[in-house]
Amino acid sequence: MKKKSSTYWKNRFLEIEKASNAYGVDAFRQIEPSFDLAQREIQKQIESWYGRYAKNNNITMTEARRQLSTTELKEFRWDVKEYIKYGRENDLNQMWMKELENASARVHVSRLEALKVRTQHAAEVAFGNELDCIDAMARKVFTEDYYHTIFEVQKGFNIGWEIGQIDSRKLETLISKPWAADGKNFKDRIWQSKNQMVSELHNQLTRTCILGKAPDDAIKALTKYVDKDIKNKKYAAGRLVMTEQAYFHSVAQQEAFNDLDVEEFEVVATLDNSTSEICQEMDGKHFPMKDYQPGVTAPPFHVFCRSVTVPWFEDNYTGERAARDEDGNTYYVPDSMTYKDWKKSMVNGDTSGLTISDNNVIMSPKKSNDDKYNKILFALEKRSVDYNPVKNHAKQLSEEEIVAALAGGDMTGGSCASVGLAYVGQRQGWDVLDFRGGHSRSVFANSLNLLDLSQMTGMKVLKAEGASAITVGNRLLKQCEVGKEYYLAVGRHAAIVRKTADGVYQYLELQSATKSGWINFDGNPRYTLKTRFGCSSTSSGSSYYDFMLDLDESDFSSNDDFRTLLGFLNTATDAQRKGSSGTIK
Image (cartoon, rainbow, N blue to C red; front, side, top):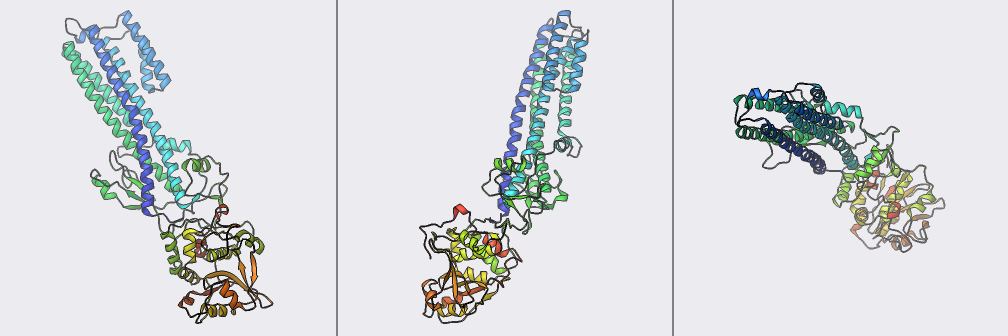
């Protein structure tokens, strides 16, 4: 896996914010019709009230305060009964429910009081719906954004662990927690807005009666007032829902970052002509997680804020510090894993089919202090070679088992160099296969890259001088010691070689469809060097790249570099390009 860039993280988290923002937009689409319905209901009640009680083109305060007749009181109680039924079915504000119950029991209700109850109920329904929609939206935003944040980070580092379901009590606390400077949460703001509207509407109704306006003028004035007030409340609801969406998105990421052991976060603003000054100023700044505070160091910085936070990683962050489930297991999360499959595994606990990782697996490649290693890593990443982490075998394989796992007819352009390196990895107890072909093969077949590999930290490299590749190869073989194995790269071939107790040189054939295993050099090693290794007997500068690694004296595991490189040739069993139609190369 290629290490993810800063741009990668920004793009992924902007996509999460885009989806999260859509939750807010959808919530407002559900809220808006309730206010439109409330407006129509209030206007209907006002027009009906004036149509019933206005006399001589006028209605006085005395008339407004007149008690309902027996028939009118019966109608009113029937309406209140329906309001109570609706309230119970839709969990309306309990204070309002208490007022309705009190109203239904009263034997004396004035005309104006009845109008106020009917108009207030319309407002209670609208604001109750707003509360329900924002509450549901907040829970959805937090839950989905928390999971999506962890999903993106785990997929980005190809390492995952079970996180389980979000604690419902913790979610309830987060939903109810005030976050703005005035100490109010969204529920407080909704009830404040509702109380303000009801109070002003009641005052307007009373004032109109006191002024004794003609019905047409009164209805016109009240309609204008209600229309303006509803528009203001709808706009306020829009501001509130989108600001709360941004807040809960930010809090979800804060919780996820903390659970992932992310140490710092970065603010990312979408820079365009409408970007606010504060967002432009905060864009690109990164802070320690202990300083994460929505509205101060993290979004939202203002109403309708679209800025986001992304994890800010040091170069050596691998995601492994937090990577433990209850059983201590970690799992390989491939780039191709979907959110649906990830959630099934990491949230719902169905990890069947996932590969358990271990502490020694290098889940993502990273630079080291070794310049030779870094050059090869750069060549691999430049060609976008996929990284497949190398895992440990459950038990050490025998030599015969290693050969059986690796060998086969080569159907690539020639994988001698890389399959030989895979053999070296197998000797370390690592489960690594080859015959991937493509850019992976070409990078490892490159003479300069192989030479750089031989000069990496910990390698015991042997060199020889000579005018031709055959001479160099012959002199390298003469340095072989009985009981040791070597990686010989000379001429146009690379293979594992050894010297038997009888003094016979052998090479390990891993590319044949019919004859794999140790094969003797012919009586004169120079002949095999020419026919199998492609060595020339003529003078050539190419012998500069010839070398031999002492596999027993080299240190392949004290750091991660060699194992990391093997991840770029490691191939799934069913993806190996080898078979009966393959040939030695």
